[in-house]
Picture (cartoon, helix red, strand yellow):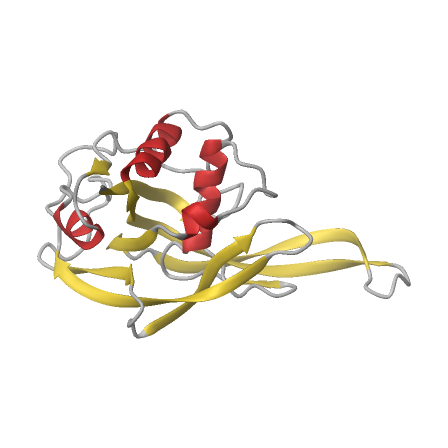
Length: 225
């Protein structure tokens, strides 16, 4: 039996890099599959050396309830050893992030695994963060009603209300929102399927994704709980 897990990514800052190189750290405009699977591994207490085949097999999608604002900051690292080992230097890196964004994330797969992941989000083994360790969730990632017996697109489209906090409503009351859903025939290519999370040999492959536009969910009448 197939089920869908829904989880919430809402925070003052979140970052979902997929192409970072050296001193330039990027972010996608929505959560990456590798980033969300890393979050789920933390919830499960799964070590970086363990295989990801079961999680990679889950179909992945995101509903963009609030796009957020693309921002960046600078971070300084002292005494960084040069590649040629000739000494150390100070390095400045540019790090991009999304401010005030709100995403409903869905993963579709076998019910036993989805049920296990839902339970792990309620009582995670390790702390959860949204792309970087300093970007803690502003609302719980776990949704009590996030275990859904619906296909992925239907689950993302029908979930009510918006997961964006009510005290910062979207400036347009009547609008559509975007779904980005994993699809072999999709028009977008995302290099965010992690083959492993080992520090010394991280590797990724490409997946295809398709954009859908749906009617916006109704606004929240309370803060995220």
